[in-house]
Image (cartoon, rainbow, N blue to C red; front, side, top):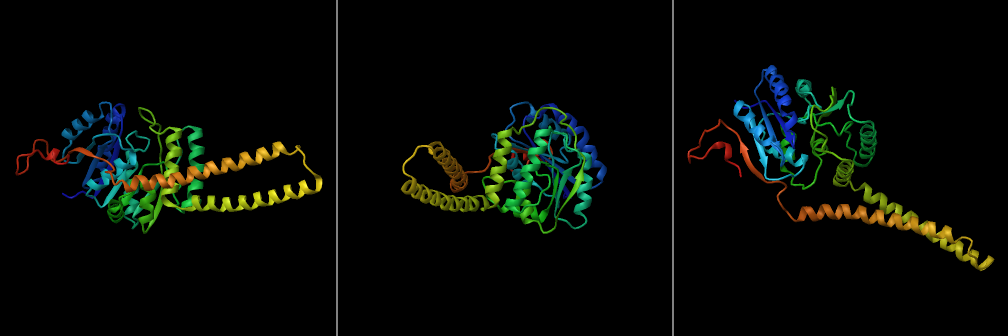
Length: 326
């Protein structure tokens, strides 16, 4: 039976928490009483995650599929790979660390049935550290001003997407992208709801401070030219100010004469300009880097194996269906 709901879960070194995830996710989905499928995408885990996922696939092959990458390509590439494998009219993304309770999935499905094609979620009470919470809120406000993408809680993975949005996302070939923002751009009727949030059940966060900064750079440079335009405007203003400063210094020298009292002020001004120039070079480099990655046209990810169908089931060529994608 064609599933009505598909749940996509990226997995990276989550062996410690997968058992708890299974124990809560499958009962929550069974309770809905609708056809569903669950797709786990293993993103190059170095622990026992693959073998644990394979065991779960053998335990529930009717609703479980496992996509296995040949290396680590990142969370959003794992989500995109899951999107390409889904069949449901509603697609749910969920973290494997149980910070998003699986029991909240029914709220997103109910909201989608009201006619929305994108449902984001806002954590009612975040269980992250204070610095992560404040940094996330600050970046959310900055990102919204630059990209005009209104996602209140961009760090929350629990989201629902309509089939129309998923099909459009699957047509995109961007090397670096932020999936919720990309889907928001394609949605006709987006909305958000409030959901519960729990502490990480096991393991540790895969996002360091550098990763969060890197993610937000990708988001802003991938969905807007505003940073580049702002820097161009800043360059024009600073050029005018520096020209005025030169005129003032020349006039002062002609009237007052030579002096060394303002030497350190000139140094400070020069260092400020050099800092702005270096920042601008880095900003331009972000856009050039994205172009470089895109024109190489390398695969965004490589799927080694897909576990699907009934274990041991073979097609007409005698090949096991659980290994049809390589």
